[in-house]
Image (cartoon, rainbow, N blue to C red; front, side, top):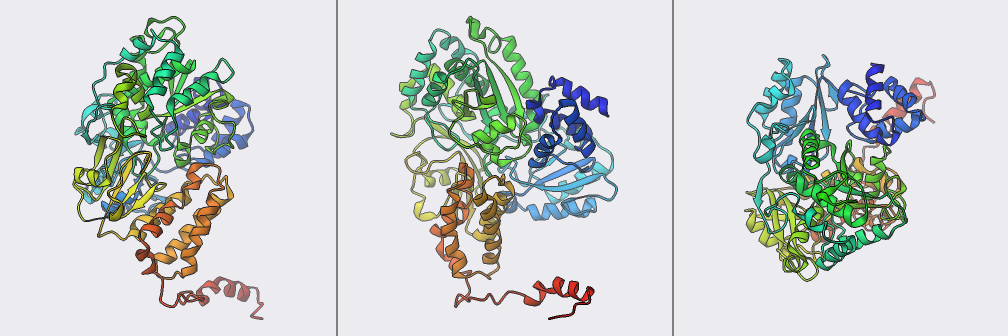
Amino acid sequence: MGNTISALIKKYNGDSTRLMDMLIDIQSERGHLSDWTIDQIAKLLEIPRVEVEQTVSFYHFFTKEPRGKYTVYLNDSVVAGFAGRERVKRAFEEAAGCTFGHVSPDGLIGLFDTSCMGMNDQEPAALINEQVFPSLTLQKARDLVDGMRAGLDIEALKGTEYGDGQNAHPLVRSLVRNNIMRKGDVIFSDHAPGRSLHKIATMSPLQLITLVNTSSVRGRGGAGFPTGLKWELARKAPGDTKYIFCNADEGEPGTFKDRVILTELPMLVFEGMAVAGYAVGAKNGILYLRNEYRYLREYLERTLDEMRERGFLGSTVAGKAGFSFDIKIQFGAGAYVCGEESALIESAEGKRGEPRDRPPFPVSKGYLQKPTVVNNVETLCAVVKIVLNGSEWYNSIGTKESKGTKVISVSGDCGKPGVYEIAWGFSVNDVLRMVEATDVQAVQVGGPSGSCIGPAEFGRVLAYEDLATGGSLIIIGAARDLVKDVVLNFARFFREESCGSCVPCRALTGMAQVVLESIAAGRATRANLDAFTGWASIMQKNRCGLGQTALNPVVTTMKNFPGVYTALVPDGDPAINPGFDLAGAVRDFDAAVDRLGGGHA
């Protein structure tokens, strides 16, 4: 076993900044990361054991205990709940002979919950030994367990009816479907690989940056920072070594567009990274991809090899001397906060994915303290099309402040969930008609960190000047319990995914969940509701945007759906909650006192 660990570490040249890669490979090989394994890794890398331990303990998919020959992670997203997750969960438990959070007595099957895994358009979904099993039913769950007990390997469990498009590629063989419902003029338009690289080879980096600036393209991750300005700042930053990161962590519940783009258009994404590298003066790029998409690994690696063979990557890109650029893939291990750019960089360096204090910003000190540009998948794709078609063409699409198109992930209570590329400026009502959604109570725009709006606001438009979004719209039908089915799920998600670095986020996400559970049970007071206003202000002290918006599910629904909450507060707003069980609360204390012979005072 020690030889296996040693070989895997040598694969990464004993570079401790590649610790994430080592841990992922070792766990895939051995099933878990025991204390002994952690000791061996630390010794071979000649680093303190605590540095390995802190990384292992931070990420959801790393485990120090065996989780079964077959490890099942069942998605616990809001939309999975809409689609009957609880029934599927019970079917797994009954068939496996154990409850979630445990391994079956024979050690064969482990059942575990996981946060949204980028499959909201085909729920309920599960990861089983790193492969995705979407659109689960009670019978499918039972059949899967039967197959496990029969000793079938993961490929046999999947069968041969693969998903559409490149999901059926021999190096993917995935059951996932793309569900591309609408193709727009930018991202999903025709792409001839390499053309943009040959075109920029005739331009100077400054001419390229000017082109991107005049196109007014902005980051598609949600913040909307001007892409050309980011590149310009990085190019001007001192130092010869610079990096380009593509942020494909896509951990926001309800978002899955990047998965589809990477499946169908990986060369477009990688080409965009190379264009950015030329502009900035970077020779190395890193695709940071969420762990749930590891089933794409061989396919993406082969795509990179093909691009090297065709001269689109390597020492002389597009035949231009001095244009050197290559890409590696870095996988995460399950941490929502790594969608924040500085946390993503920390993770890529083999550390806990905790956001950094800023300034300095990544464009001046990022990966390995070198100037680093972090762009979203969609942003990099758009840049390729801008190089080919010009800034005037791009500026002709969208609104005054929001140019181009936006790829959105639509899920929930609608007839046509999936991926839609639309021009900025579509109203929410336009989207609802397009996805065949009727009797809609609410729409969650931009995932749980965004806004939950009601019918009075469905006339608003998707644009930076109105409803900015990273790409997720969850449709909530009138039959749903907004607090129990949606807000409480989001609150549990934020509590689980807080990195714990900042006190407000660490404390208040937990307090929010507890209070929401009281609200949902009808045991809350008006003071409980009012507390969220003060807490939301305190949350602005958190280091990163993710922590600052963690109470948005509560705050925006309280603002837009006040009647839902006031209906749950008992009449009279009691100072002492009549639902509190005093005898039950002190039962353990009474038993302890009696055991010690102390009696009662």
